Length: 223
Image (cartoon, rainbow, N blue to C red; front, side, top):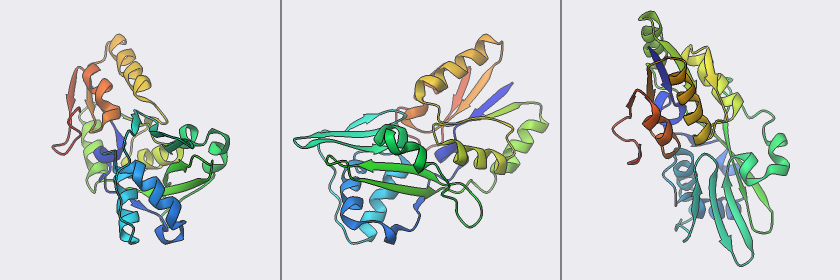
């Protein structure tokens, strides 16, 4: 009776592109891409593509640790490098990083932040369009009597914009894997039968907790 969608790669195409790629410092972009190459997350892959398009060869750094729902971390002799959500990679600048970043159509962008070992930072904004039939699917589910929700680890502005475009009234943003699991579990405790739809590493616990679950064919293996 309840359908819960993840956003990136599920409601959206999962094919984000880096906004104003040419405006970024090429060296910082290449360093960030070394971490991104260790992940299958759509934004990480988009960052690698942007670096390669700028003529920079990208070789994945060794011993990169993926922190589900937050980002990537690499310990080096000079300090820790991070790439991921603003709160994870650069907590001190997270609030400033969330001020704006919208494209011409008014769709809020998603953000990743890279923090080098020497604490230099770079902020990367991505646009990922919703699937063309997302709104129609949501409308048909709602008309059929299902409660529809959007549950995402992405930042609030981006999730709010996606929910508005898809016609979903109930949504949660900036939700880590544990939070997704807790929400699905709470819905079950409330007596709801939840269909969870997701495609990524971050969705795996919630997918396992759903009464039923679905993933696109191109989803991460763990999903």
